[in-house]
Image 1 (spheres, rainbow over the protein chains, first blue to last red):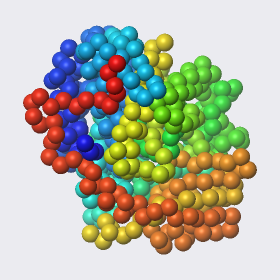
Image 2: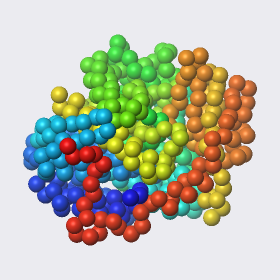
Image 3: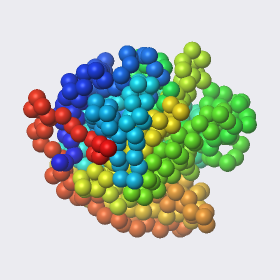
Image 4: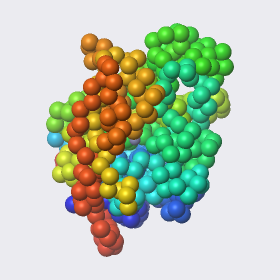
Length: 357
Length: 102
Ligand SMILES: [Zn+2]
């Protein structure tokens, strides 16, 4: 075994859909990537699509974080195979019963999009291993050093960061196409980002969202633009009174997060971490995305912000996994990556069960 | 080809406090992996991916920079662990998860 190339991620998804026709459905994403590659996701569940609440899991957003695709492909394969055979799942010291597996398949719509950024992954696996962005050349001016948009800065959340944040907040986002965290010319300028939005729009019962990244062994909850607070609803990302004040943490501004959502997010993140720890003892930390400096335009904040911007939209609790440790970095040896896959898949199965509880 | 053969150093940046780290990130805009961590004594650290020149530019009062490895060289070596062809092309080839089915 080895890491999957982009052809193999695609064929893994299609072969799972073929092998388990009663419990899985191949989803054609509406837009090809910038380099015209078709994108696919899988919906798994024994009930008809839309019957149950939905969890959307995505990976392969940042090109160099190779193992995210493998984590999601193996997760789906485990669940489909165990449901079909009527077995449970054992990940080292963390185990799940056949009833646990049946509960997930029968009570949840699980939509898994394992490779959001195929062009970037291909480039990282064959040319520059540390490539992060997509491969959009539109704003490069022909300079190969200025290709690409950071998909996880391209969502519509505080996109105008120069207005949103305090001048000394040092947000990790840029308007410069040569920067590794280039946000793109406008929100959802990239087809890869629009595909993820399409999943939320197409499964309006989406209540949970997990974006799989690496690395630092963390399970991050919203928000990423500032520290959370649950006392003052006026301090929120839509309120222009707080422009140029956000992003410093522990000062005049904290991003409002309703207490019940803060509690629910923390419980889910902690259950994820506990299941990971049970596998072989790795310690992942549950915490909010803001740590010393802010971000804008990320997937998890966008997912949660949707119901605040538009009351007709359902509430989605957003999360970001950062798998792997410093020793392995973005590209652990495959033998170590397999252990990480088991860790994180155990965490994600537990996450689904905790969400349904 | 030039950009693909340059070393990209993975360095641990340790700053004496949060404001020092923020100022450093503002001024130098390095590619940082993962998120920053704060120690009990208030000091902060983060991993960055930088050219040898950029690594030197990170050095300043209140900041120490330690090189971990050449991440570009390591990553290029790891490219040998990426599948070629399509292991799932045969009609009966289906991915299996890594859990024990119990
Ligand atoms: Zn990432």
